[in-house]
Image 1 (cartoon, rainbow, N blue to C red):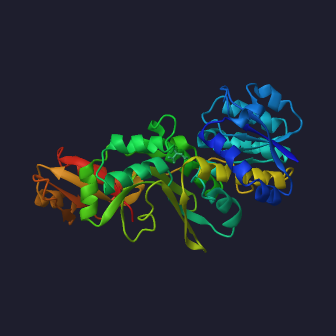
Image 2 (tube, protein in one colour):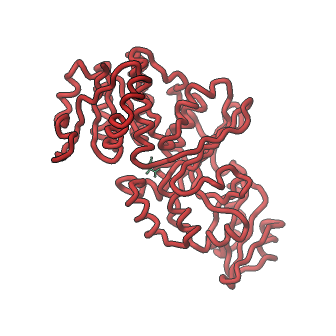
Image 3 (cartoon, rainbow, N blue to C red):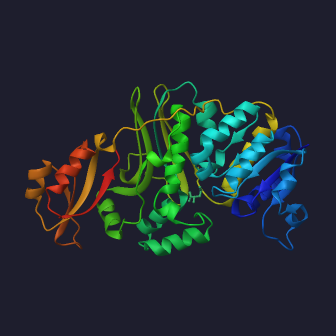
Length: 404
Ligand code: HSE
């Protein structure tokens, strides 16, 4: 029998208990032994819930119990999660977590302890909800040099943008619905400002490129400035707007990464990733394109990924599995050097004046927005775009990058 302890009985924690109870037969078969939840840690009580029988309020009971082999950290946040996880690993207990903030900040430290102790620190649920993307990057795509990861990595904002685009509803209504469905973070700022997607692309890039990408180095822009008019322009162009988290290797030691809203066309496999779904596009030098798609947030999809880690850890109690991780730092190039096309909305200027600055552009007008128009530039470095934009003397109302 393998004894586990679940830290946190919130949305994901209660999902983990539900998944293990619902699928216990197949899970035990796959793990090769019975998985038993010995403890659930939470500060609260849950009268009437069977979890009450295994509920503890004191972490010392768990850490000092030699029968506990695996600890599931689903509390979220940095502290006390970091202290609890570090102590668990130091005590020789494997850990799995859904906590992207923890992995993005302390991944190198925790991974090194797990490696030294020949145990595991796994984090499948930290990126892409129920999509097995970490496992794919660590143990499936090992024949490739990966040169691009571009993902819709935040279910909340994808849900919101989909609602705003298809139902014309406002930002606040869309956010409220996403929160009610249990997709959003406790503080939804992390979702709507892109911080959540930023941590996820940092984790995925670290695995894909074999060097640690610090999330604090990634340029991050959220969806709070997007308006229904931007959505209308996108439709008029036969495109849509998605919050993309992207990283690319463009030379032997040359990488860039960013999180921002992008206009994408119907030829992109990410165009049809709607609602709360996540999609992760990966390009490898021998594989070519691969696309991973699935439920990106929510109680049971996330719990499914957590429990898959429990099964893996139960099968490899004393063998470290995270072989693709390397803690050497990955340095990013200046964003101003990165090339792309730009969608720009302007007011109080003319196409002629715009073309004097930007050269030939693709122009789009909306009948219900007289006095303004939008254009898409040719490909240019971001630094060059910024210089040209200054020359339009304050006529620019909005700029959104275009995904190539
Ligand atoms: N708030 C996150 C999201 C939860 O919406 O994607 C899953 O990480």
